[in-house]
Every structure is written in structure tokens, then in C-alpha cells.
Image 1 (cartoon, helix red, strand yellow):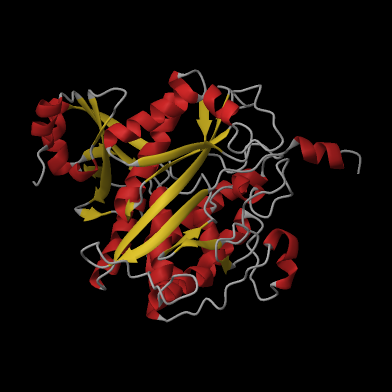
Image 2: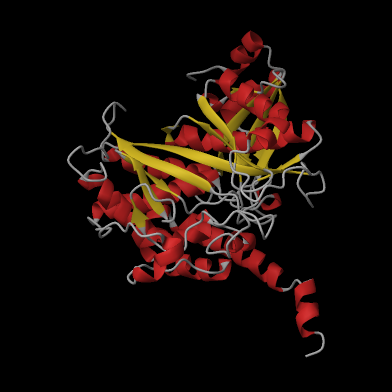
Length: 435
């Protein structure tokens, strides 16, 4: 074993480990393991019943084991006697194909075979609300355009500072914190890195933010659209491919208007080819589709995409190129599964490279004002059901991502959709009671 977790526990004073995994719905699951037992867990894994989580299993299935990845270890800055570990799921001596982290590692291996090292960064937006989740935690955060509001930001300084201090201590390279476009909404940015490390940190960031907010008597939510009149929570992803050494950016071209190489455009073409299908993963809840192509918010814009388009430094498009050698995918929302999202990005991008997909010319119009001028652009799905059906029909993406994970994901999400449609809302009563 490259890293001995039992020895690390003694050296760092870790008394317990959270051996965790993320299920298909993005829910973080874990067992709390005392340090005395971590040696066995590192070898054989912590046992779980797969049916008890959102995985496509039954009560009759064998035990599932989460084998911790020692490279993922994070010692909780706010409680250093606990170490968090991401794990890979195994059953009957084989990796669980229909599990998110395994699915991402499979895509990373495909990229590595081509000599590619995928690097990504994420921008995680969240709201600070009251403990019941019914209203904002700050009653004074009421500006029509609250983005970058210093007063509102500093009223939440204790929470923001503690989260940022943790990232500094962990060596993530945080570089800015701001009040976002919605009242009560915040975003905290840290350095991009290798895609698996980014996904692990994305998972931990959500856990950390929720925990610290709770410790301050608040609740942090990454829900895509918690308030109908306010901007929703996005999770924009910045993407680039490097050589094996990680020193040469293969997406960079100084001879291109947008600073992108031929490889980057092909990767981009793959994402645009499969974007409407990937909405099922990037925008995975019923609530997600209240963020996409939503009515104008109180701030004046939703900042979310409406169609499959790309541009230069123009935030009204699904993809923008803010700088040479990378692009930003603005479609993902706060509910996306950190592992499945990155796996889908790589799978679609590699398909674009393999088939030399052309994204077409960029568009530079304001999509919120002149979107009708881009007649060739595909519209994004308007419901989770539409997105799931598109993913189900996408044979290429199913093959690239793996039929096991795609079929399982669709099956469980269809169950969630049927559960939603059986729910009777107040709106239905108000509009149809006297029909």
C-alpha cells in the first residue's frame, strides 16, 4: 500500500475515519470507522447494503464494500480527529460499474490511453437559509441587484471565513469569495486540478459548507432553484486537457481567435452534440428545470443557459471561452453528481475527438435578448422526463459512459419522476378545483 492509513492516523492524531461514497443521486454516504480498524478497511473495504442507498440493487444482493482511496484523505480542519476518505465500490470481487466514482475513473483511464490528462475546476454556488429552509438567513439581504454586495457578504463573514480558512489549510488554493447574483447566495472559488481530485473536493466542499453553516445556526443549500424569483444555483465547470506531464495545455492555441486548439474544438463539439442528453446528469432534479430558461429574476437575468450554443467571454451562452486554453460549461447546477458530471464531460468530449465533431461557429449575440437569431441552436429540455428520455435514446453516450451506470441511473430517476407526478400540489388545487 502506497499510504498506510493506520500509520497516518497515529502520525496525525486521527481517531476516526469517514469511509464515504456518493450514490447515483449524489447523496454522500459513509461509515464512521475507528482508527484501530482502518487497516482492515483499507484492504477489504467498509461494508454497505447497496439497496439502502440510491444504487440499482436489491436486498438480495451481496454485501458492497467501499474501499477507501488513501490519496483522497482529508483531515477535517474543524475537527482534526476525523479523516474523510472517498472510496470505490466493490461487490463480489469486482468494481461496481454502476457507481459514480468508478464511472469517472473509467473515463479518466480512457483519456490517459490517448495521452490526455483532464483538468477541471468547479464554481459551487449555494444559499444560506434558515434551518427550516423556508427563507434566507439574512433578513437584510434585500437589494434588487445584490451581486458582490459587500455589506451582505460581510454579514456572513464568520461562515465564509471559516469555509475559506479550511480550504487554505487543506491547500486547495482558494482565491476569491463573493456574494452572488441572488439574495442570500454565495460562491467560493479554488484552483482547478486533475479531474478526480476536483470531483473529490467538490463532494467534500458540499459536506464542509453544509456542516459549517449548521454550526452557525444556518443551512446551506445547493438546490438548483430554491426561490422562484431569484437566480438559481449553478455549478459551472472549467475544462482543459493537458499532456501526460501536466505541463502542456493541449487546448491552447495562440493562433485562434478564442485561444482554442483543434483538439479543444473537437472536445467542445462532443459536448454540444450530447448536451441535451447530458442534462439528465447535469440537471438531475425536477427542480433543475425551474433554473434552465427561467423567467427573468429580480436581478434582471437568470445567468443560466437557454440553448446549446458557445461564445467568447459572453455569459448568456451555454459555453463561454473566458480565456485562452480552456472553456466554461455553464449548464451544470448545484444538484449535479460531482463524479457523474465530470464522467459525462469526458465521455462526450472524447466522442467529439474520436469523431472530429465540429461545434460550428461561435455566436456572439446576447442569448437573452436575441436568442431567436441563432436558429440552428438546439433548445435544452424543459423537464427532467424530457432529459431522461433523451439520455435513454443516446446510444453513443450510453456506450461511452457504460450501459450499467446509464441504465441504472435512468431507472432510479424515472422512479423519482413518477413519485413527483403522483404528488398533488397547491397550484393544482387552486387552478383546477372548480374546473
